[in-house]
Each structure stands twice: as C-alpha cells, then as structure tokens.
Image (cartoon, rainbow, N blue to C red; front, side):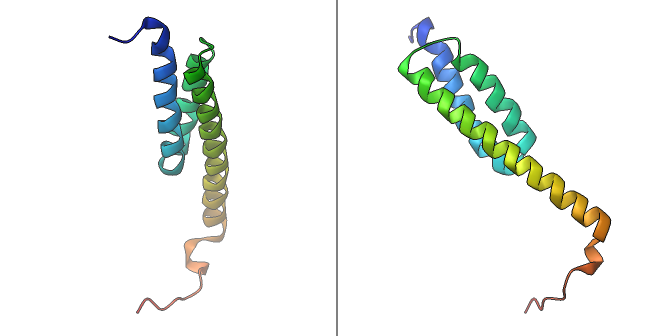
Length: 91
C-alpha cells in the first residue's frame, strides 16, 4: 500500500494531467481541476509534488487561454452572426 505521505502528490499529479486534457475540451473544468491540483501539490514538498505543481500550472494557463478564446469566439459570432461567414464549397 502506498504511503500516506505520497497520496497528495499522486492526486495532484493526476489532477495536473487531467487539467491539461480538459483544457482543450472543457476549459472551465480544466481550470478548476488545475487549481485543486495546485492546492494539493502545496501540501507536500516531495519530488512528485513539485512535478505535479508544474503540470497544474501548465493546465491552469492552457485552460485560461482556451477560456478567453472561447469567450472571444462566442462574442464574435453573437455580434456578427454566423450568416456572414464566407461561402466555402464543401465538395
């Protein structure tokens, strides 16, 4: 069985990886998972928790960027409308 000392590091590491993945599918979920993982990674000072902290920061940054892009695209299509897109032949 794993030591109780390593549990927060493993949880934080998994949350960091999932926050990076969720950044591209659901940026708000990626942001939340990254922040939770960052909190867990600060509870320890092991080598695994340091790596997990880096992963969580990457996940938070990617999620924030994707969230801003999603909001900008939503505002653009709300104000301009989808009908103004150029006609592109599909076949």
